[in-house]
Length: 135
Image (cartoon, rainbow, N blue to C red; front, side, top):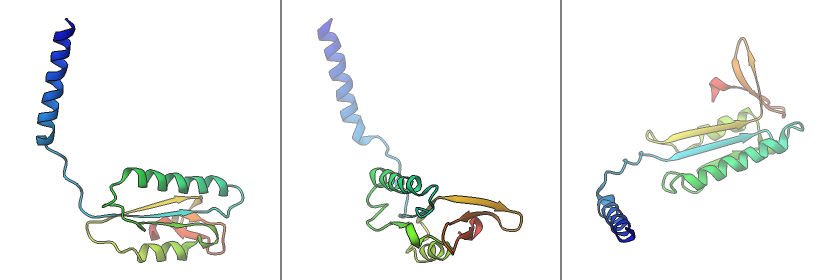
């Protein structure tokens, strides 16, 4: 009995090892991933938590996205006294992105809704209001 289980196991492993390289692999998506992470770390009520969010999102992406898709410098983090509407919009405008590229914008901080502008990001600094539709 033990020999037949062993033979079946070897046969299954052999088939997987032989067929595996010839199995169809999903095509890789074209383009690169550009990431902008904006966190309002200066806000006294949420600063430590949003800083952790920034680290976790970066770690998640760096550990799971192919290096060819997420090259060095593809993750731009805006935090501390740099956070604000101008810094975010400048970061978006300066991305060296092509038509096949993907842009991921991650924000961790306060936000609100207004009847005129809709949803917006609310930062602790002087440049503290950015409508979501502008991004």
